[in-house]
Image (tube, rainbow, N blue to C red; front, top):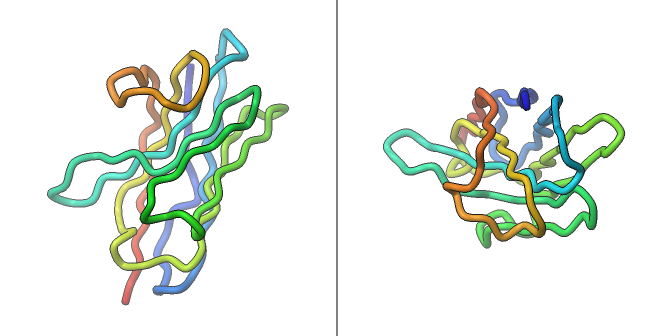
Length: 123
C-alpha cells in the first residue's frame, strides 16, 4: 500500500485548501482512510475519516462544518476540503489507511501512512 498526500500550502485565515490522498496497492475493498494532523510540539490527532464502501464519515468537533472528507473509489483518492481555515489548523497533515469495517479505529490500527503535507494558515 502506498499513500501520497498533496495540496498543502500557505493560506490566509478564512481561506480554503483541498488535500488529496492518492492510494495504490490496496488488496481489499473494505478499508477506512483517515486524515490526521500534527502541529509543532503537539501529538498527532485524527481529524476526519471515511469508509471505502458505505462512505460513512466522522469529524472531530473543531472542524465540523468547515472540513469535508470525500472519496473517489475509481482512483482510490480521498480528499479533504478545508474551508474557513484558522491559524490553529496549521500542521502537517497525513492520510492513513486501515483495513476493516467502519470509521471507528484506534490510532494504532492504522498500518499505512503517507509522508505528510504542510498546511500553514496565517492570521
